[in-house]
Length: 75
Image (cartoon, rainbow, N blue to C red; front, side):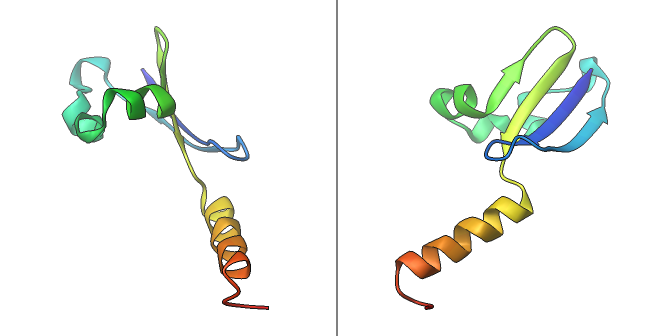
């Protein structure tokens, strides 16, 4: 099974991992702490692949900069 991590903002693929489907659990992936709504928002599961939407470093840095400008912390 493949785990595909992609940026939910720019849609770039961040990483692809090949894992043993029998060893994958929500606990091991850290999904057990998410609410059902959060899981629905970030996880898309198909027969042979799990896509996980996260934010890449570039988009996170851009969001931080926009936040600083909007809060008038930098000009």
